[in-house]
Amino acid sequence: MSHHAPAIVERRLWVLPALAGTALICAVWQPYAPDAIDMLNRHGAPTLAHWLGTDHLGRDVLARLMAGMGRTFLALGIVATMCVMLGLAVGLAAASTSGILRGALLRVAEFASVMPTLVVAIAIVSLLGFDAVTAGIALGLGAWGPYALLADGLARRALSEPYVQAARALGGTKSRLMFRHVLPAVLDTQLAYLGAKLGRIVIAYAALAFLGLGADSSRPDWGAMLFEYRLYMFDHPALMLWPGFAVVVTCAALRTALGQDRGARVPASSGDTAAALECADLHVHGAADNPVATGVETARRTG
Amino acid sequence: MPRAAIAEGLRALLLLWLASLAAFAVVRAMPADPAVLSLVAFGQAADPDTVAALHREWGLDQALPLQYAAWLGDFLTGDWRRSFKTGAPILDEFAKRLPVSLIVGFGGLFVALLAVGPLARGAAKRPNGWAARVLDAATLGAQAIPAFWLGCLLLWFFAVELRVIDVLGEGPARYVLPILIVAFTGLGPLAQVYRAGLAEVSRADYFRTALAKGADPDTALEAQGGRYARLGLSAALTAEAGWVVGGTAVVEVVFGLPGLGTFLVDSIAMRDYFVLQAYIVVAAAWMLAIAFVAAGARHLLDPRLR
Image 1 (tube, chains in turn green, purple):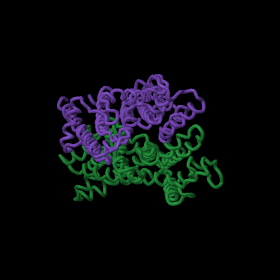
Image 2 (image 1 turned 135 degrees about the horizontal axis):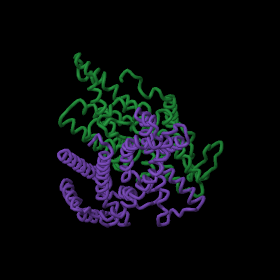
Image 3 (image 1 turned 45 degrees about the horizontal axis):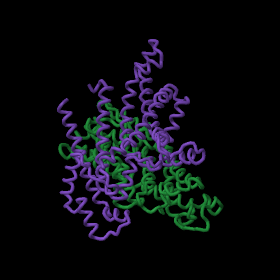
Image 4 (image 1 turned 60 degrees about the horizontal axis):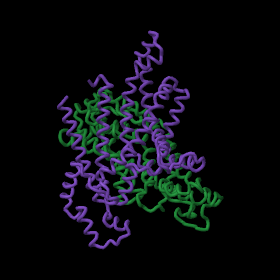
């Protein structure tokens, strides 16, 4: 399977750089300072100067949405990097060892999967304070578990494949085996799984910002804006619409680029990881004889 | 089998113990002193004597390992301590609030399941039919629309524009919208898994054989593939059910429901140590319990495991 093109190549991948580019521009430039208050222009209607109008403090809604996009993608990048790196490190380490160390690594990964992501993230965010970076770290710490279990299952399966056995028989060192043969096979599925989950991460970040937890509401996060603007539901419902639209459009675009999140079908490589995988909203088919090829192919098709 | 069951039980206990340790560590690492926060909340001056007295009363003046051991002992014997904020026993508070979260969570899953069967069967039979379209739209919607935004929109539409639902009133009516939102988020993943299972069976040789023998397609699909598809569905349902105690917080906050989620958010703001510790352990125990039930269900549905 290492000879196949990565699963995500088949998708409409141009959407991804377009989104990231937009996010980058939004992060560094906004038409107005996102927290510039103008009390003479409260609840302004959309005009040429303020395309989406102004909010209850006269702040430019478009500028706040743009700053929010930059922050969302910063958090998204952190979560994605953490999930893949931690997942690969722990998963491959577990797959290449045995005995107590392997057991310990898998228990830690299971534990990370069992804890509900949002609860872990809420606790960590209240520890570190809320901004895009800490929220990204918090969500990443809450979400990496399944990636490690996935990597372990796939890597162990790959290690028993005939071509990897052949490479080992030819005298390949363990690290070479891991990097040349196992890593590509694991990374492929790992990225496909991550791609399908990106939309969920965007929503989780918005949910965390929505809950706020005592942080000041001047942060231009989409979730925090929703929390703030929902109080003006009666008189100015349009305010509440824009941040939600921003989340929906972003998630829909991510799905167009990377496929949908139907849950990768992961082989239940061993009974002990299956339970934890299910908790981590992977849809495991319980049969132990489910070949990994099916899992990989399903992941290719669905995300 | 008994040995495997014992090992499984020990593993669950180990995970729970780890959860309690992590809960204690994370909660105590949070900056800000609950005694100071409480005094401020009650409009009292936070002078050092009063703070020290509160610490003594709550047992926070002991060394951390001693505090942990004492709390764990109390927790296991059913004394979950009292909330700093309300002064009420935490166990009672949980018993009062858990049903609210369960009604929203399981009510939503139940409503979703009602729609899963017809939609998935229709979509499996006709990949381009209306059921498939509705299902795909619902799946995309659930992945792209944040539940709390949907909640705000529904509140605005039904309570502000139409004035048909008294959302802030007591009574069963206030559960309608939250349950529908949970159903909406759960429908897509559940129905897609069920549909995929049925579609897989409908492509299998043995299903074609059944058709060749003259079986009615609907009956044959249920007879040949119903159990297989429900096996997949039970796994998906597990993932969704794990969400009930961890994930309804935002929906509860939007609708002001007195469930566990709102309790969690309030308690974090007040650094209500024992509430948070109890919550994290309960959430982990819930996940394990769901996984256990799911394993049992798989055992019943999958003859290969017997």
